[in-house]
Image 1 (cartoon, one colour):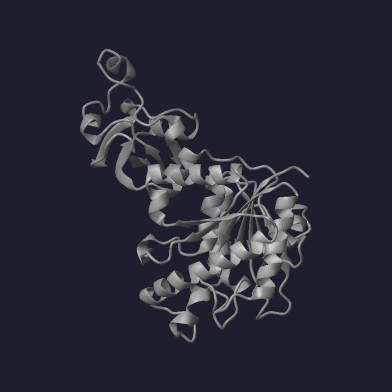
Image 2 (cartoon, helix red, strand yellow):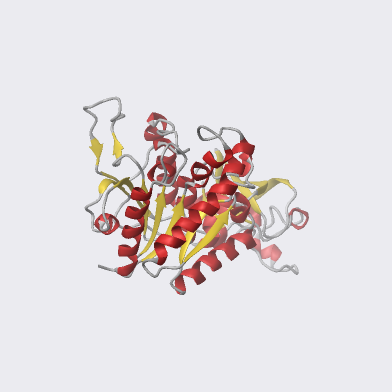
Amino acid sequence: MEKKRIVVKIGSSSLTNLKGEIDQEKFSDHIEAIAALRQDGHEVLLVSSGAVASGFRSLGYPARPVSLKGRQAAAAIGQSLLIQSYMDKLGQFGIIPAQILLTRNDFAKKERYRNAYATLRELLERGILPIINENDTVSVAELTFGDNDMLSALVSGMVHADQLIILTDINGLYDSNPRKNPSAKRIDRLNEITEEMLIGAEGPGSKAGTGGMLSKLMAAKTSLSLGVRIFIGNGQGERKLLEILEGKGDGTYIGKNVLSQVTSRKQWIAHHSLVMGKIYIDKGAEEALLSQGRSLLPAGIYKFTGTFEKGDVVEVIGTDGLIGKGEVLYSSENLKHIIGKRSDDLKQETIMTIEVIHRDQWVKA
């Protein structure tokens, strides 16, 4: 089998029990499967939930805390317990893990995004297994990923993974809730995630975790947009991850056989950047961007809003609304002097570049 880069996401319900303890039987099963994947020559990154679920009992909570301070305190205890368990179990297979804790800011800031990618790449090149989790102890509600399903999708795109595997307590997607409808049928394969599927999905499915099928569908949609295929399901035994790669997994495969990967720069623009303004363009410029794959030139711009610097990201507004986002090559102060001007006129002026947004720094909405 061709050697691949695989991101495996394990949810809280697949790691812990309702008492707030790591389920050693489940845990060992996952470790053996990861070791088998590595022994077969594949690169593996692990996105692991379970910090809050592992720590709340030590705080005296009878169940997973709902308050922010309670979750953060539980994560502070549980994260150390979780990574120590990984170190002990993986060490039996000669695998060295590295803990990576991320927040939304690590993705939103361009330099931090690049540094995170560089760190992960260095770890993989040296045969280390990155274990990634959200930094729950410092994250605030408005800056979280929502759950580790979305984090795993974003990490998969960042490292240009070949496959994202989300292990959960249900063996894939169904046409209705199998816990309520015994006649529900599993969906073995999907090419895409539609808005209808998102609307019909339900919320969290277990007391141990935060992510239900809706979060997994949203993660799958994001993963596909970044050029990464996804599997949602479960399995048992040391070969379960290898069987998933062989197309024999107990779950749902999502994505076409061939997907176009998205450059790191475009991923950052599309999913992580802060929007600092809006640029309004005419029909001709819209056609050039959307249909002809060209850059945005000053002649097609008739106004802009916001205050931004060179390198900031702005939304581009066409005749019917938002059409995409891009990284500007002009500050708002300099842009106001050239909007509406044609290229021939600008060539006579002393400017660094004619393009306002280069096509390599542009993504469609």
